[in-house]
Each structure stands twice: as C-alpha cells, then as structure tokens.
Image 1 (tube, rainbow, N blue to C red):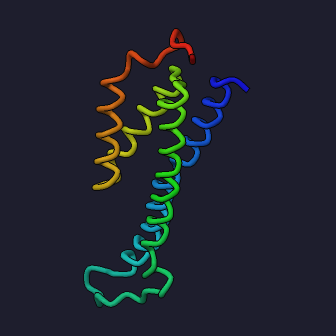
Image 2: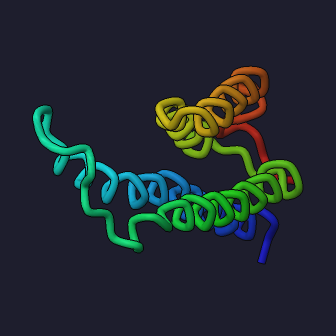
Amino acid sequence: MSKEVIGKYIAILGLFLFWAFPLGVADAFYPMYSSFQDISLFGKNEPKINPEEISMLKSIVVGFGIFMLGLMFLLVSVIGLNYRTNWLFWTLLIYSILLLFLIPIGTFLGLTGLIMLSLNRKKFGSDVHVT
C-alpha cells in the first residue's frame, strides 16, 4: 500500500477515536443532569444518588485516553505520512470548534487545534501530494 492510502486509513481511524472524549463527557453528565432534576427549589437538597453515578469520572478518563490515542493516529497521519487533504482540514476545523464548548480541557484542546490549523492551513489542500 502507498503512503497516501495508509495515511487516509490512519486519519479516518483517528477521527473516529476523536469522538470518544465528547461522548465520555456526555455519558458522565447525563446521570448528573437527571440527579439535578430530582432537586427542586423548595425540596430537600438530598437527592438519592446511585453508586454508579458517583463513578462518573471513569467515562471521562476512558474517553480522554481514547481521544489521545486518536490524536496520536492523526499526528502520525498528518506529520509522519504527510497526509493533508482539504476534507481532513475542514473536519479538524469543525471538530476544534466543537471542542471549545467542553470547558476547561476541551477549550484548551480546541484553541490549540484552531491555532495549529490556522498556522498550517496552506499545507493542507488537494495540490499537496504525499511523498
């Protein structure tokens, strides 16, 4: 297989693994949201919380670990294999904008991604060939 084909598959795998962090955060905050719905303005501030809801941090940590693995795949694809196409640029740009809303870690990663993409935008494109 050529470097371009390998880079494409590694980039796609990295993009799929990138979604683990937002999904882990959503998985952690959904039980919290339902617990907060049990608390009313005039009720007791003692909602019944299951022990499973206490270990919500686990899904965030696992999601962040898988996210970092996806980031490594993308770095190998973009830097190591020099796979830089337009669709990858726009996908990473949209994903970086979405990460801005996951405060505080996602905001830092989203800003870092936006800065890196804006500094290297001329390196992405259909006229850039993998060598």
